[in-house]
Image 1 (cartoon, rainbow, N blue to C red):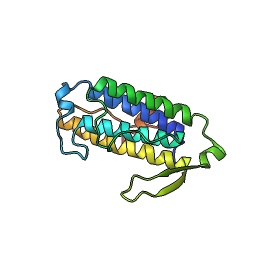
Image 2 (image 1 turned 120 degrees about the vertical axis):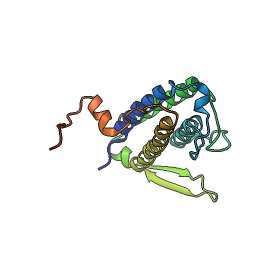
Image 3 (image 1 turned 90 degrees about the vertical axis):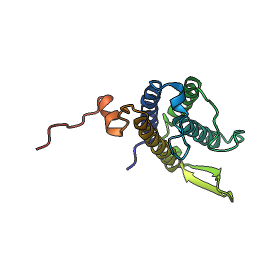
Image 4 (image 1 turned 30 degrees about the vertical axis):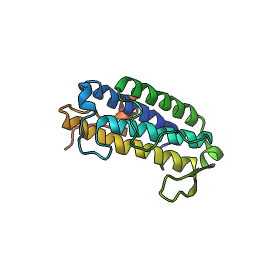
Length: 176
C-alpha cells in the first residue's frame, strides 16, 4: 500500500526544506548554472517543482489555470522568494491532506491534461497525490545530483531517513 497522502505531504515538506537548505550554501550564480538537467539548472528545476505544485492545487480548487506559459518558466530567480512560495504550497498540501480519508480519498479529481492534444482525466485523490509526490521525488533527485556537481555533499532525502528523524522505530544494526 502507498503511504497516505498526508504522510507524503509531510515527507515532501521535510525533503524540500533539506534541499533548499543545501541550495542556500551555493553562491547565487551557481543556482542558475546549466548542469544539463531537463530544466537545465537547480533554479530551473526548483521553479518547475513550484509550477507543477501550483497546477495541482489549481486543479483541486477547480480554479482557472495560472498564467505561466510553460513548465520551464522561471517565476522566481532568487532562492528566498522561491522557497517562500514553495513553503506556502507545502502548507496547502499539508492542510488539504490532513483529514483525507475513506470516501474523500477515493473521490475523483478531474482535470484536463497538458498533453499536446488535451484530454480530460479523472483519478482518485490517492492516485492524484501519489503522482504529485512521485513527481516531486523525481525532480528532487535531479537537484540532489546537481548539488553534487556543484561540489556539495547533498543531504539525505530518503523516506526512511525522514521516518528515522521523526522517531519512527527503524531497526538498525551493523550488517553481518
